[in-house]
Length: 338
Image 1 (cartoon, rainbow, N blue to C red):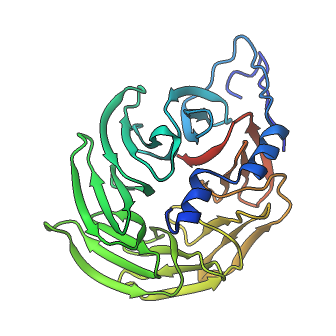
Image 2: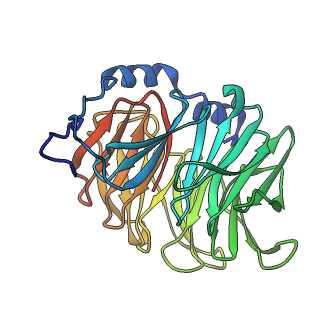
Image 3: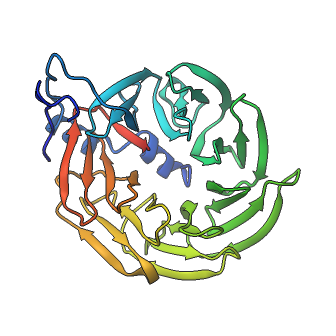
């Protein structure tokens, strides 16, 4: 991986199960330590270097920091936060983040909203958090406590409302007035938020445990990742009927859809490879020569490229899967958002 150094003349340049939650939040320490050592030394920036507008935020759990990056992946802002494990950027530049209080994955978690200026705007307290996504600009939090679970919506004032109480809830995502919820036992629930309490519109059993659900390329559709043995990616219709489904064979935990396009990236958590699948489940790109492993979270760009995080670095692939200059020097990255 190439780590970029700007010159002075270039200023622009889940508790899906307890073990899975521990893996996601406590991290694969042996692999992470090796990767971090390989890219630990960040380059010294030129004295007059000024980063550009922030386009990406990463959660560096071991550095106790949320770090804002510009288009060149250079740091432009840093927010101190104890053990950040999830982050989602709002359309107004604000940032939702989940902090594992006392650095304990099964303990109390704080949900915080930071304004575009980096100041705290709102907060709420939860137990163990499995997932953070958005419903419009509100936070969607999947919480699991002992044998109970729920999906909660939190607005910009910190007001909470329960979307669904479900002991097996593992992930959630919002699109418009609807929320899709995935479960440990392989179900997808679809709810309408326009009523109080929210109305269950549909429910579908897909098979293995659902690791991620995201809004699909057209209104009402949904991407779903089954994290069972086959690592199955499905695109569901608004009725939750299957448009297509493909067994990837990857050990993936999250999806990175290309917005507005029938195309989705996934990364393997055990091998240094990533793939992009397109219409009807066709394999569009297979990159098996990435320089770092320990991949998980990713964020696709509108042109079909993708940012991937390893524990110690951000990798960047162009729309053809070609590795572009990334950035290292992080302690242990666990999430990113754009």
